Length: 344
Image (cartoon, rainbow, N blue to C red; front, top):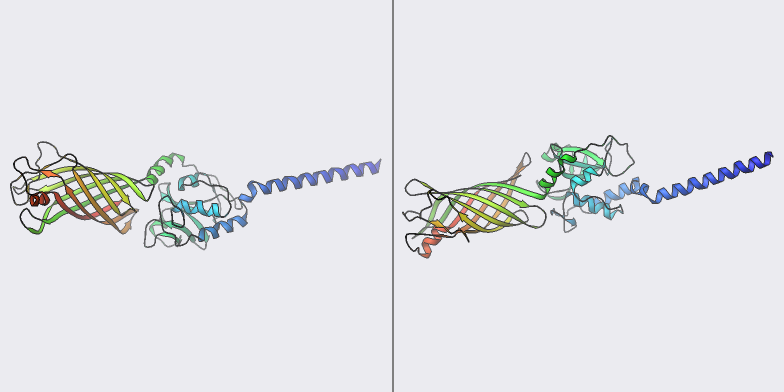
């Protein structure tokens, strides 16, 4: 009878061991591998393979890559399951951790609105794809460099499970704001307008000032947008002429822009006059304006990008009182505009 009990106990122990071993192997084939430390190291090395890659909005390859694209590409290259594509989605699908270790994600932004993400490398260093600053593209930076990006650090999180978790914060009510910020560019500019084509001569002269606002879709290498302007011209008699061009834009690489659209004015307001004459100019509604511009970043200030802005455009104008010569049309319609643009 005693022998039978020993056999039963031995049988139960063997079955329990085999069952535990099967469960362990099953777990190793699933979610557990996704979080192990070996893949954490591989994830970092795959990210480093992109060092020197130029920044490109929406990019996920060595031809061009953005901040969340670097995380996405490194995870894919290291064999991790597919992860979210945007910085905000990464924030919402990772876990807060008590300690910061290599391979954790660093999130940056303002007012808890995530706008940038990087990978921590240890020793206060992190790898990320920078869109602005002295160096852009995939670079290694320091958390303690006291720069504008470091000052906007929000938190660190992880999709690895080998460090202690803390309570997960919820900022989902910021999701729409962040999507709006990531998906669109907003710009404002002020310029001095000038030309060198006079009605009957060649020579530099002041034409007025322009105030401009733009919104652009921020998704591709060439992005469409909408621009509105208020152009204020000086009149010979001391009055001013005000025009309101509205144009569709195409922007390449955030620097080079082409646009075309219509030009309106408010009836009863003073309209522009031809330089050094009393000839009143009236804009055509459509086509009203066509032009091109270049934007050159100068420096960053509290999250705003300050840029040099040079524009060349032609306003389609006419005169209700007389027929204008080609020289007069060019003098009235051709404009150069030089000033400052702010991107935010």
